[in-house]
Length: 228
Length: 182
Image (cartoon, rainbow over all chains, first blue to last red; front, side, top):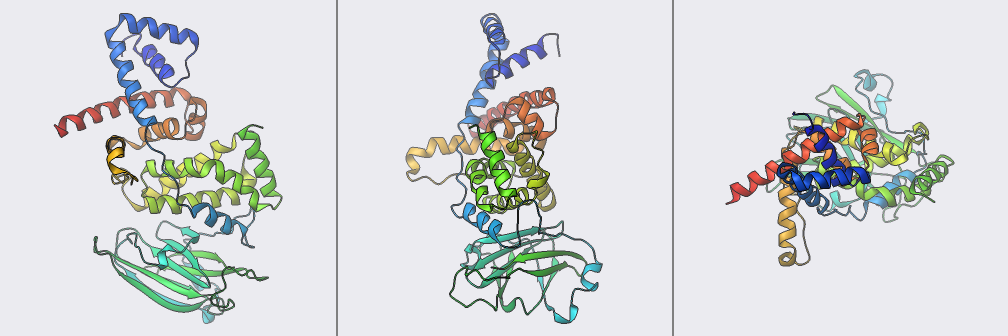
C-alpha cells in the first residue's frame, strides 16, 4: 500500500459509515475534487453500502416471540439458571438413569431432516437441544410433545429414551421429502397427566421429563423437556 | 430513558423472577437477531430455532451478564457465536441460503427491489466468514465501529480494515454478477 492509501481508506470508511469528524469530511471533499481514484473508491464503497442498507429486513415468524416467552414461563426455568443440559458422556445412560423404567425407541435417520409442512411440525417449539452429534427439537400441541431428532448429513442410528410415567409413547411419523427425497422422522409422546383437548393447562409440580438421546449407540444428550 | 437503561431494567426484573420482563428485550432485539442469523447463513427454519435458542440461553445466563457493558453487545455476541457453532457443526460455513428472497403482495411492483436483494444476498454468500461478519455488525446490526469491534472481539482498526475489504470484495462480486448476466 502506498503512503496515504491507508489514510484515504480510513477517510472513505468514516464518511460512508457516518463516523467522520467535520475535519475528516472536509479532507475527503478536497480529495474527491482533486483525485479521480479517490472519487472512484468513494463512489464504489458508498454504492455497496447503500445497497446493503437497502436490503429488506425480514420479519421473524409471528409465533416466535410467544413461544420464547412460553418457554421462559415454564416453572423449571428462571433467569440466571440454565436448565438445559448437554452431555457427550457415554456413561450417562448406564449410570443410574433408571434404566428399568425407560422407554427406548431407536430409529435410523438417513439424512438431515429437511423442513416439512406436516401439521405436527407446525406446532410451536418449546425447546431445542443441541450437541455436536444431534439436535432435538421439541414441539408441543395440546397434551402432545413432538420430538424431532436432527442429525448432520450422514446416516445415524438415533435412540430416544424416557420415563414412561412422565411421557407416553403415541407414535412415530416420518416420510420422505417429495422434493429432496430425504427421510425425516418425529416421535409423538403424550403427557399422561394432561387431559386431551386442554391447552396449556397449568398444573402444580408439572416439572420436567428427561429424554436421553444417543446417536449410533454412543454420543448422548440429555434433554430436560419442560412439561406444562 | 435510553435503550441501554431499559435493557438493564429488564435484566434486573428478570433476575428478580419476573420472566415477563424479558418481553421488552424481545421487542427490541428479536428482529435484528433473527436477521443477523439469516445473513450469517441459516435458512428460515434454522433462524427461527436458533433465535429461540439464543434468547433462552441469554435469559438463563443473565446472571453472567457484565453490567459494565452494553446488553445488546453481549446478546449479539451470543447470537453470532451460537449461529457460527451451529453452522460449523451442520454444514460447510460458506453456503448461505441463496433462496432467501422475499414474497411480496405485489410481485411486479417489488420485482426490482427483490432482484437487487437477491443479488446482494448471493454476493454475501461468496464472502469469507470474517468479512461477512464485518458487514453484518455494521449494516444489519447497525453497530458503531466500537460496538461492532466489541461484539466480534476485535481491535477497532481490524474491524475497519475488514469492513473496507469486505465492501470492495462485494463490489467486485456484484460487478462480476452483472457481467455474467449480460
